[in-house]
Image (cartoon, rainbow, N blue to C red; front, side, top):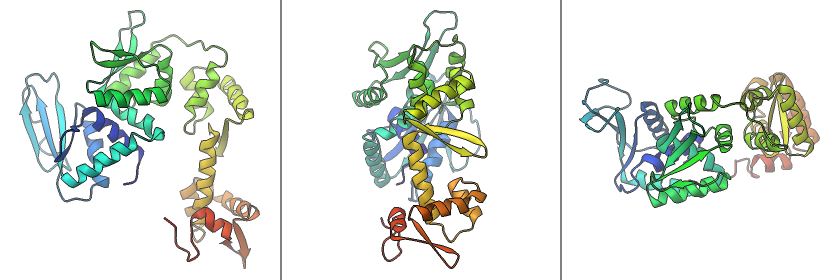
Length: 348
C-alpha cells in the first residue's frame, strides 16, 4: 500500500475516532460529512475487496438528510437523543483488510516523517479550539486523549515536534497555547476539519501582531519550509514585509539551510534537503522518460518545456547521459540513478 498524505490523514482520523478493538470491520466516526467522505474515498483507493462500505447517520430526530449518497448503496438512520448535531459512522466489514490496515497504522506511527500528517488527522478527530475573544490568555487548542495508547502516540508526536506537553487530567486532553500556536499554524495542524480550521484561523487573526525575539523569526521560517513556499506566502503567514522575509531567507541560504527553485519567474523556497530531493527526483523523471516529448517530460517534472534541452545537456555534462546520432541515452551512471538493471528493467 503506497503511503500518501491522505492515507496518513486517515491514519490520524482512525486513531482518534476509529474502533481499534474491532476485529471484523474498519470504522470511523465524525460529525463532518466531508471528513467521512474523505476517509471513504481514500480507503476505496487502496481496498481491493468486494465488500461495500456502509454509512450510519445518528441525530436527535432521525431525519433522513439525503436519500442517496454515492458510493454508499444504503444509508442507515438512527436516533440518538444525546446528539446535539448529526454524526456519521463509516463501516467496512473485511477481516483481512482490517488486519492490513492495522499493520499500516502500526508501521506509520513509528516513522517520524509521517508525524505532522498523522497529527493533522488526530486533531480533525479529537481536537478543539478554545477561544474567548474578551478574555485574556483564552486562546488555545486541545486534543482529547482518553485512552493510554492514544496518549502515548500523541506525546511521542508532540515531543518530536518540540511542542510542550501539557496534559489536563480533569478534561483528559492536551492543550497548546501561547507562542506554540504559531507553530501549529505553520504546520497547518488544524486544516483538515472545515469548522475547526475556520475557528483556528479566526483565533489567530484576532491576536495582535507577534513580536519575535532575535533569531526567533529565522527559526520559525526555517521550520515552516518543510515544503516549497513563496516569499509572499511567508510574508502573509508571519505578518512581515516581503523585504524582511527575503532578508531572513538570504541569511538562511548563506548558512546552507534553505534554497530555492524558480518556476515561471517565481521563487519557491524550501529546506535544502527538500530541494535536493526534488532535484534528484526530477533527474530520475527525465532519465526514465527520454522517449517522451518535451511537453510530457515537463508535465512530469514541473520544468518549463523550453528548459528541457538545457536539463538534458546538464545531465550529459554530469555523466548521466551520452549523445548518439542526435539522441540521448543513459550511461551506466544514469541507469544506476534511475534504478534500472542491466536488462533494462526497473529495479525493486
